[in-house]
Each structure stands twice: as structure tokens, then as C-alpha cells.
Length: 400
Image 1 (cartoon, rainbow, N blue to C red):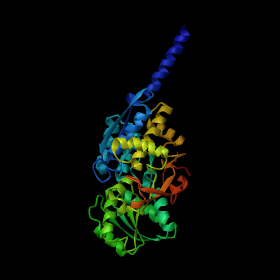
Image 2: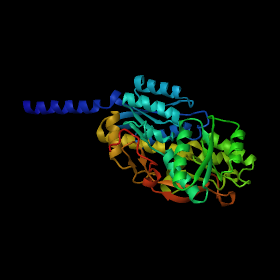
Image 3: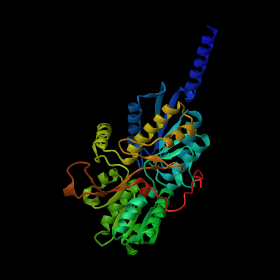
Image 4: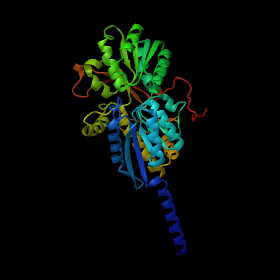
């Protein structure tokens, strides 16, 4: 009887220890993004809904501990994003922050997450520096990055004859990284960069930048911007007659929400690289229908990525019985990613999710069969090709 009592006590202690590994007896996830500005349609409330869908689909709890969701608007300001992350991780018991478009904000949040040893799941930000020189052992760059965009749209446009480029670049970390990575791909494929101009974030008037691009005589005007800035630059390029004048626009980061705002008449013929499109197959259509029922619009790749990242994160907590940041991310890296938008994905040592990307072309109005029927798929870009770095891996986590 004494021996049985000892075994029972040991089992009880082990059980208590295991359950205590989930801090605060709750798994708390924070969606941090632009809720009201030029990137709100890309992530915003849609990313919060995608996170809510993931938590519901996972069952609302992990290892018997409730999963909670909070959200905030970083206003595209690094100091605001950093302050929220510090509050969440330090005082509010948040275990993971997800989404965070605007690379300058993401880089600031990543530093907080690194110092606190908390998980950072990046879906909205693009700068490849997040898994390059600024990489962190507790971060995963989930959906796409500037390298994959360059290897997709940039390479395709050069191979199709667009061998001289001029960039209109958003003047912050994302735009700089996208211009840099695309320039390397252009030059590797035999093209030339004739120049660039940098435009402030959330610019209303692109006229002076477009005139410089027009005067460069480059065949391709590369738009190294996103969201509202992409929409404005494409609309104003139409007013300047740039395409009619013989130059072509290359939207290096274009979302389905941008096409919806522009309309097919203005956007048709644009080629773009994406990790996801709602109408690719039965799985993407089924998930997107659920999203559409809630949000009354089709999801962007960022919103779909938020869902996938959270599901993989929660599965890693379940597998390890812990919400400790380094432990969970190590498990995430060890586990292949398979969901409705990713097949046989693998998280690289630097934190990049290597997955297939897709080259799409925007349909002509006459080709569209109805609302949100905007893309036709041109090519599949295998993950190893899409995320192939243009030089040595600068991440200190990478050995050798």
C-alpha cells in the first residue's frame, strides 16, 4: 500500500508539473496589425477573424487550457507596436503575437519577442531581414517575404523581356528590402536597374514619382509598395497614360483586396506572386467560404496565413505540453506544414516557412465569371526556388 501511495503521489506531481508548463493556465494569442490605415484590408479585422477561426477549429483549448485572443492596432508605427508587445508579453500574459504587417513595426516587435523569449508568427510583414540579419530563435516568417516576391514576379517579368527597371519604393524597411531583393534577381537574370525613387508611406500623390519613372524610359516600373500605396500608384499611373506609353507596371506585392479596389478594368494583365488564392482548389474554396460568410469578402494570403500559423503553433504546444517560446518554435520547425494553403512546407533554420508560391495574372473583365473571380494561375514556383536567397544566409542561427 505504501508503494502504491508513493507511485500515486509521483503521478500526481508529474501531472501537476506538466500542466504548469502552460504559463498562467491559458494560451494567450495577440493579433497585432493595422486596423484602420492603408493595410487594414490586407490584415486588419480579417486577420482577427482568421485567428478566431483557428482557435475554434482547434477546439478552443489545448491540454485542457483555454485559448484566449486579443488584438490591437499598431498604427504602422514601430514605437507603438513595440510598446504594445512589451505590455502584452510583460504584463498581460500573451504567449504569441501574430500578423504584424509593416516591416519596420515587425522588426521592432521581433526584438521584444526575442528578449522575452516569446513566439512571433509573422504573416503580414515582408522584409527578408526578419529571417536574415535580424532573425530570432522564437520567430517564424510564415506567409511570404521579399525574396519570394522577387524570385516570383521579378524573375518572371525579366524572362518575359522586361529587362530594364525603375523602382518606386515605399520608404521604410519593407520597400527597401523589396527593391534590394528584386534588383538582385533582375541583375542575375540579365536585366538592369536604371534607378529608383522613394515615396513616403501612405502617399496620396504619386505624380512626381511616376514622372521620374516615366522619364527613366525603363521598360518596367517596379512598385515596391503595398496596400493603399499600390492602389494609388496604379490608379495614377493610368491617369498619366504610362502603360499606353509603352512602359509596364510590375506590382511586386499585390493582394486580392487591392484588385478588388482597383477593378479589373484598371488591373487586368498585372502579374503577381502570392502564397494563396481563394479559388485554387476545393480546400481553399471551403475555408474561404467560411471566411466570406463572416467578413463578406474573400481572404488575402495574410489572413489565410494567420490561420495556418496559429494552427501549427497550437499543434506544437499540444505536442510538447508547453507554451515556452523556444520549445514551441523548435517543435514547429521539426514538423512539416500541411494545411489548406500549404503542402509539405518546412520551416527553415532561420525561421522562414519554405512553401510553394504561385504566379498569377489578373483577368480581363471579360474573363471573370463573377465577384472576386480575379486571377488565373500562370505558374507554380517550388518552395526551394521561391525562397532561394540571393546571397549567403545572414541569419546568425544558421550554422556553416
